[in-house]
Image 1: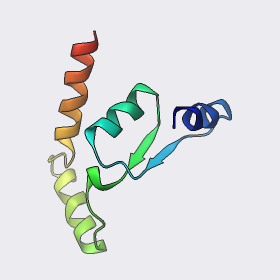
Image 2: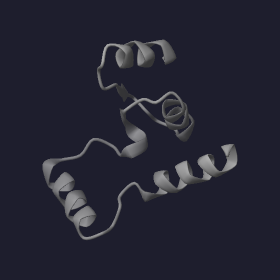
Image 3: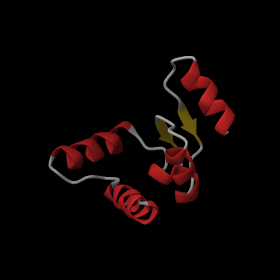
Length: 80
């Protein structure tokens, strides 16, 4: 996985990891400077209506993935 990320970055591409299902996966991707991630960790597939509701909650100030951001802050503090 690390080699694929490095290869994409060396070609000037933005890298998207698919199938991210755990915080361990996300931590690995962050440590290896992967640009984007998608998968069940961020939510199950949803309908257009559900996505619109999620975006409306986000626009009103509720971060749908705030728990993942807090985890990243904790990791940064531990590694500093």
